Each structure stands twice: as structure tokens, then as C-alpha cells.
Length: 219
Image (cartoon, rainbow, N blue to C red; front, side):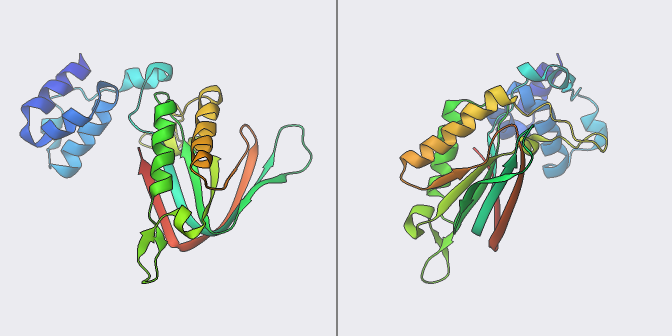
């Protein structure tokens, strides 16, 4: 009922109709409420007319879907990741690159192989390296850039309530690991060098950000 009422309000408001068209029912509550308040200036009184309730999403994370696979991309001079699994006495370096991109990938419940493929294509085509004129106009392949891909479930941390983040939107490792591997495989199939972290281990990432250049990508 809450979702239906939100959809009805969104469709009836010209300022929110575009948001409603690109927002699915499972995250319409938080998305529309934030858009209504921050972008379109809806008053609190007007917002209270609708039950902007995403409690079902919170209580049943396995069935709660979100729209986008998420990545944080940093252009780097160099980057490396060390990893230590349970039972190992010391951490060991499992991936390192020279100039290129360090990519932290967050996977949520609705992501699939198509999401991973789209992210890989976006990363491969991302033009964030300088050309001869100092303009960010070149992709990684054009400058011989490498990729370090590290899974990071904390990208889906929710800090809207309280001080301790909620991780309910982050996919379980059984779901996330194959999709991160798929991103890596897709990038390698495009002809670039890709190093990775290691799932279900404690990792330390050491990088030198070039620029600095940092992007948040939702695909």
C-alpha cells in the first residue's frame, strides 16, 4: 500500500513524474522522498501525506532490490592490495598495478551478469587520463593503464539511521563473488591487465591517487 501511494503521488506531480519513470517500486520510497525534499522543495507537511516506508525492504533484504551496481574509481599512479585469510599468520600481496584505475566494486541483491558486463564496459571506456593537452580525454587502453579491482560491500552501507551503518543492501559473498569475477573477466577480454583482491579475507589497499581523480559510478 505504501509503495502504491508513493507511485500515485509521483505520477500526479509533474515535477516527480520523470523520477517515477526511472525508479522501480523497491527503492521508490527513499529515492522519491529525497528527490521531493532536496531537489523540488517539498515541505515536510506535504511529505507527511504519504507513507514513505521502506521497512519491508529493510526487514527482508533478500527480496529487496536496488537499481544499480556501484563502483568507486580512482585514477592512480600505483596501487596494491594485501590479503590475509582466517588461519593465515601473515598478509601477502595478491595484486598490484602501475598507472591505471583502482576500482572498488559493490554488489547488491538485484545485480546480475548483465550488470557486471555493463560496469566493465563503462570502466573500459572511461576517459579519465590526460591527453597531450592535459585534458582528461583518454581511456585506460589508450595509455596502457591497468586495473586493480577490489570487492567492497561497504559501498552499500546505509547511514541514514543511527551511527552504525546497515549492510542489508549488500549482497552476500555467494552472490557477489561471481559477479565481481565477471567484471574482471569482461575487462580482461577487452585486452587490459587486471589485478584483483581476494574475497572473504582482510585486505589492505595501498594506492597513490593521481590528480586526485575519484569517481562514483552507478550503472
